[in-house]
Image 1 (tube, helix red, strand yellow):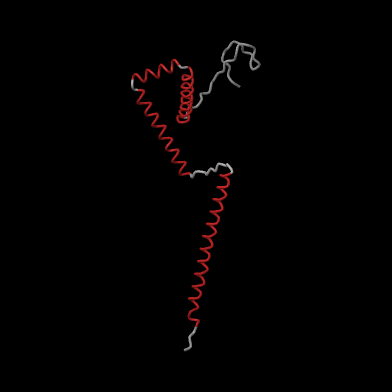
Image 2: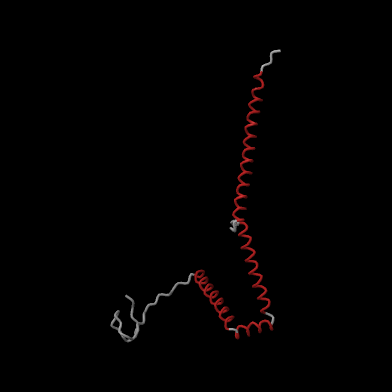
Length: 157
């Protein structure tokens, strides 16, 4: 019986490739586990020394927090709107505003901020343009720009 071992060369090449791939997979898994254990030990060591470890939140989680905050603000506004229509609560808040100076300052500050923001927003949307003054009134005292002191309109140069 004369057997030819060349017939098994493809199988041997396949076996060698398979062994090489499995060794690479094993080595990658081992190195990843080793690096994870090292990083975890490093973090635990920092925690034991009193450091506070903070991780950056992913964008998806930040988006969830922003959405939940927005929903909470809307809920508070809605509850405040409902409570405002109850007469004795409305009278209580009006009296609180009129009698408490600190509360009045805070409410005025917030309302001025909102009004100025809305005024700015309205100008941006409507595209309001500033009207050009065709005349300028100068003060009555001596002016170095013109010799007209009668407070009459003077055309700009």
